Image 1 (spheres, rainbow, N blue to C red):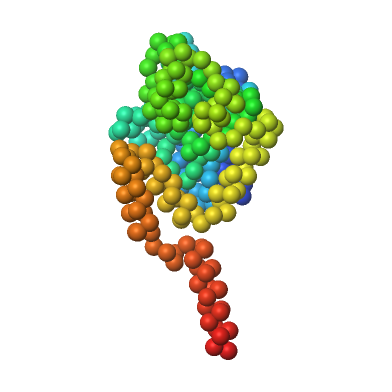
Image 2: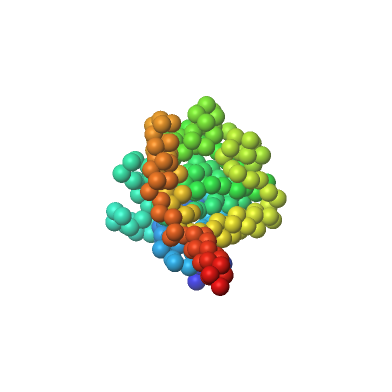
Amino acid sequence: MPEPVVLVDIEERVATVTLNRPEARNALSRELTQALWDAVTAAGRDTDVDAVILTGADPAFCAGVDLKEVSGEIPATAAPRASGQGPERDSNGLYRFLPVIGKPVIGAVNGVAVTGGLEVALQCTFLVASERARFADTHARLGIMPGGGATVLLAQSVGLRRAVEMSLTGNFLTADEALDFGLVNHVVPHQELLPCARRLAADIVSNDQRGVRRLLRHYRQLANTATLDEAHHIEGVMAETWQPGTSQVAARRREVTARGRAQTRA
């Protein structure tokens, strides 16, 4: 039996999802995109998972959409799915390779992330990169238009002028350039990529998960604000409507306070 096109490993409340078509540089076949969607959806629903790491089987992170399958050069690798059952264009127009879940998805970019592969990376919560990582938007080279966030999410990450340059030239960024541009948060030696991503995931897991998920939802809301005042308003509403006393930290504080009062009475 062939290996699954997506591998999932769950350890210490972190699900590591690996794109596993290394012979095709993890190109996005229909089978792969559906399996990726299912894996991230399952992690979002799994009560034993608090964070997700998304990476690729070396040497690439993802080389983009499988053009051989799209062009009909090779047969379709899976049957189409009904709306709502897999990757599709959202009501806001964005083609979602990843479902929106209430938990952070850390992209661990181990090699090239090109075009559709760049869009998959951009749909992660944030990115860490191997020194071998390379990033490019080559839609213009191929004569096709992006629809998975290459213009919008890229501009949010690196700024409008840099995003325009990347899209119109199709030129590649090195890992260090991506760090300078703000596309990735960290660049590490290749062998340290997954350990680094796991340390960050462990830091997230160690926090109050109700608070983590509320903050994540808040940052997503901010991305839709039109003005700074609107952004501040959304943060203010979150602060005023957050109910203290329900988090793990608050519970510990109440316990300590109760003990102190008991000792005082004694």
